Image (cartoon, rainbow, N blue to C red; front, side, top):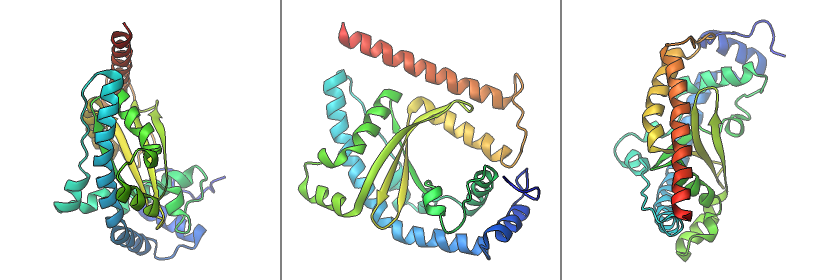
Length: 258
């Protein structure tokens, strides 16, 4: 159970003081900086390989999805742009975001500290894929999990086997916020974990607005969910978009089977 001195609302300095006292993680901010600097140095080759694998995988999924659904699709990812155009740091969680997440997790008694942070927080390195529909996002995520058997390029398959330990995915259904997507975790053998968020084009704008509201409300214990507020509108919109995508998928399958 969290002790009475735990900051119930997010306060950076109060949280750091609590964290250092309870976990003996002295120089917490400096050590987080060092951790992320090390990740950025080690992860570059992993991310380059992931970009290459994704582009290869896109071709496979476009072909297979087209055969099964008779619908042309296309996937897009900003990963390579981030690697080459100066926004590399955007692929990594910021120190402020890490501290906030430590506060949220430890508020729920998860005992996250610097000794287990890479295991307990799996989105320290993250990127995304935008799919045309939720169904095509699911198709990509499911097939990524078994990507080893889908790569017919022997050189690339060998490189993946040498570098990637495992890939797993799960639906990311946050009913309380109206967010629906697929998250894939790529575990590399050098202990780097990359979270790949796969979501539909309809969710793209929702995510942008959601992130903006999240940044505004970070650390606030009581968010205003009353009727007509921007928070309640955003949640309702997320559910409406998800309902529309489910209906679209059902209609698509009905057309295919008739």
